[in-house]
Image (cartoon, rainbow, N blue to C red; front, side):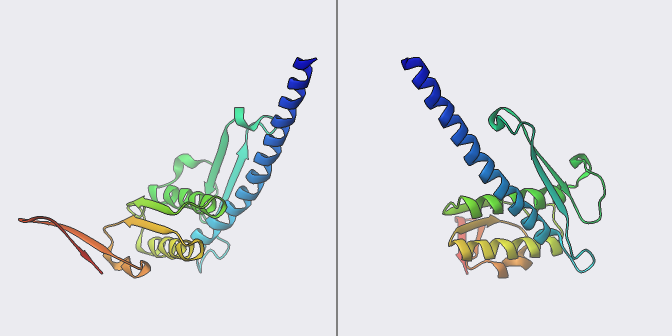
Length: 171
């Protein structure tokens, strides 16, 4: 009798957890699509790209895989193997932005996330990150070598090495 009650309670917990996960997954998959479109749209491609996120097992989502496909505006293939480093970066940042909107953390650190991006995509990315930081009141630390884009940050620290050691300058 105790085993039956415990089994029923466990089944209830599993169903509740799966329902909660699938509800969150549905919301996040919509937001990823929105964020990816915002980061990839342009005058030439006003609708932006498409992102597809799917679960391999919807009944037991924790035992399956999560498949994510990014399709930039000018592409027609559904394989991530042909994406450039910059196209991957935009896709994964769209996921991160979505997760930050859903489950915010006080600090986000990017280490040269813009390394594979051209100037135009960097501007769009940093603009989205600035909006995210203001809207969610988050501290975003971004390490970059692209000094033209420092206008998107509220504080800028320059680190440099001199004969006296490592120095820094705050703007």
